[in-house]
Image 1 (tube, helix red, strand yellow):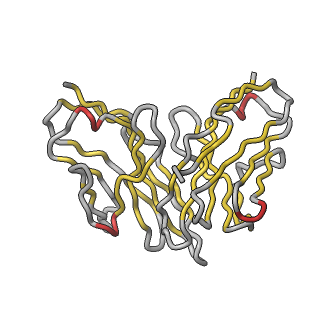
Image 2 (cartoon, each protein chain N blue to C red):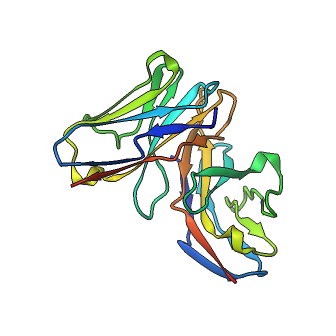
Length: 114
Length: 111
């Protein structure tokens, strides 16, 4: 296990298209997080899973965004009807249940909406 | 609500000079504070956390609850310290600790 992985690393899409990103956390980590990072900003929390349960969603996560974590393993983040404002780096992180705030990040997926 | 403020977007220092990256936070409970670092072309990674009271790569940070600060310090900057540094706060209840990040400070160490 080499850490958190994300796929794809880059995605260019046209406005209005749907996109899906995948995150594979560190295998023994119960918690999985999605963040969005735009230029000049720190990571902004989007949503959080504990095992397969989605326990919190940010108000940043509009109804065009949906995330899943079937079977508590990998997770997917889907954006429907993409808008130019969705262009950002999407980061995934995972942590142990006992890991208070210590998160391990993936390399991110850079989304460009044209 | 929890908030993290990093007042400097860019900090430039000469090699060998002391470094202090500022971080102030707002949180009503007892937070846990962290510093994350992102080197060029690498992923975000944990540098240190206040509960460990450790020194990593020569960096230390002390939690000052009175001033609600968690500044990152190093006595002598090195070129390899050039990176983005993010202060982060972990707080919440019910077993879930939401993490809030600051906007980051870019540290540039001039040779």
